[in-house]
Length: 96
Image 1 (cartoon, one colour):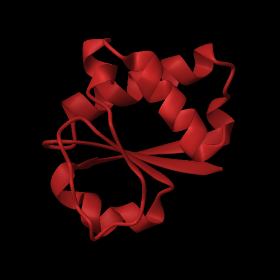
Image 2: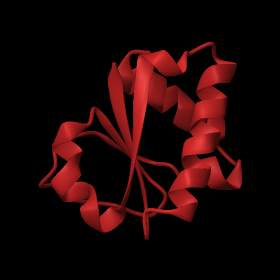
Image 3: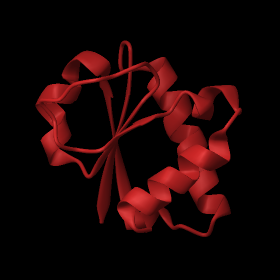
Image 4: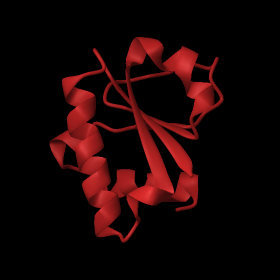
């Protein structure tokens, strides 16, 4: 099972919206929720949590060379502009 961390500024509302959209889009591609698990955090917590996940999706700009987990900009999950590209990247990075 792949583990995805979704992070936003405070780790509450925005990341919840992004997670819901991510689940919806993955389901639209026939990817079962049994194939992955989601976690939620603030961007400030990413560095301490990232190593426990296979992928990090942030809704804000995030650059931190201290983590080795791939990071994807998830802003399109909120704006609906470029969602397909984000989902393609998630699927490719996780091999779903």
